[in-house]
Amino acid sequence: MSDSLVIIPTYNEKENIERIIRKVFSLNQPFHVLIIDDGSPDGTADIVKSLQTEYDGHLFIVERAGKQGLGTAYIYGFNWALQKDYQFIFEMDADFSHNPDDLARLRDACLNGADVAIGSRYVKGVNVVNWPMGRVLMSYFASMYVRFITRINIQDATAGFKCYRRIVLETIPLEKIRFVGYAFQIEMKFTAIKFGFNVIEVPIIFTDRTEGTSKMSTRIFREAFLGVIQMKVSSWFRDYKR
Image (cartoon, rainbow, N blue to C red; front, side, top):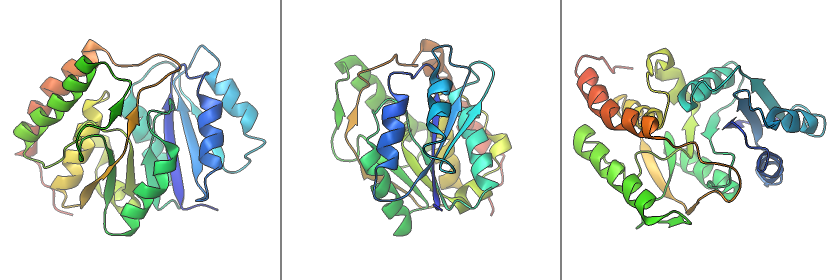
């Protein structure tokens, strides 16, 4: 048994999915893995299912019809985890931009006082490998923009490598999380902080994918830019009492 579940959303990740699964299961700390695949036409789900016999009871997959968005995948995964007995629930990408070796560091942070531990690219300088300068600047200044609008002191506001203690996901009304793209990552951090949870940043090195295709788009960026203002205004009319 494991008290820790790693949720990995996928869409067309056949080049990475077997390697990332095997890497997680090779770690000293026992983790379970939940893949949420949005109808990948490249056979990603078939690769996962072929590994389930080998990792029986530790590897799970949910197949959804078509691309429904990063946020909805994670919300589904959070609710799935809460129906079980997991105490630490992780978000992680399939493409090795998040180093699975850092999972234990995020878990340790939650064992030592954090309610949410963020794998942060910017808490100690800029720790990004293989990104073009334009992408680095866009991400870095996006976090500055989020801090300015929301007044939360998070250096890497759009980070998607995280560990939640169970109590956080039990407290946040997940059905009210509205964003589905990268704004989802901002909204979850903002909401956790508004509820009074201790959100800390753990420095990591982020390495851009070498296999597969990025899912970033102009629409996703626009949702994040405008969504931050909408989120802040909406927060004035919400009750964050636990």
